[in-house]
Amino acid sequence: MKKDVMLVTGAGQISMAIARRTGFGKKIILGDRKIENAVAIAKVMNEAGFDVVPFEMDLSCRESIWAMIAEAQKYGEIRYLVNGAGVSPSQAPIEVILKVDLYGTAVLLEEVGKVIAEGGSGITISSQSGWRMPQLTAEEDRLLAMTPTEDLLALDLLKPENIRDTLHAYQLAKRCNEKRVMAECIRWGERGARLNGIAPGIIVTPLALDEFNGPRGDFYKNMFAKCPAGRPGTADEVANVAELLMSEKGAFITGSTFLIDGGATSSYFYGPLQPNT
Image (cartoon, rainbow, N blue to C red; front, side):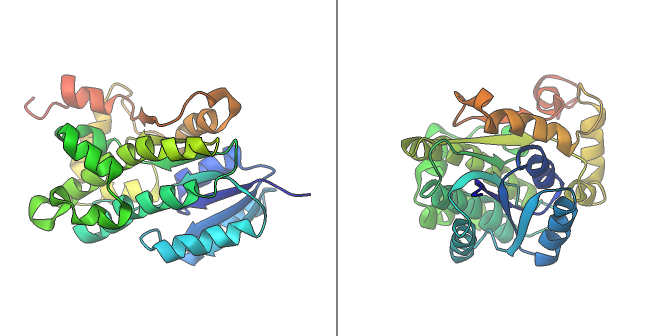
């Protein structure tokens, strides 16, 4: 029996939670730069009754994305995308953050958008960080949304001399993710498919634990202590939103990015997390 195909990038807790929630009955191609991570997650899911094929892929490389798409097409039409791949400010230098989180995500949305099946749906995982940085101009936002992918990293606002540190690079990457979702959803719509983003706050994952134990650990712990929810979130709570967006119940939702951060962004602008309080 032929199955719908789901592409999943990033063999992490959020990707796995979404794939477990929405991937039953589907052929799942799970890509990660570290094949051992993809193999480990595939083993867990296959032993729980899913159908997962691990695949080595590098989000920062268009040829690697092409290879993953080609692998997926061996099994049928690609109907779903879950992009959970990326690096955090404590895990990589500025150049890598921009190449993976910003450029790589833009290329992935572009290339999958060329082959996504009618009725398909895609999710890319962004971050609350893109919501907390100072507002960009309308023209800067448009450039992030519309610039051809191979020219993105040459934009003035992304030049090394204009980026303060890895957190600033990460914020710019996540702002770009949001804008690319808006632009690419137009192209996806021409194929009868939808594309949305989810911007999580502090979610307990190995990546978040790296941040808790990194140079900004106290900042992150303070963030979830002073957000309205008073705690970090879980990958399953992100999957709750993804399940809506990828199902027929979300059929009128496309081009949107959903903030799921326990109110941390609200507290940052209007509550006890304000920088001057």
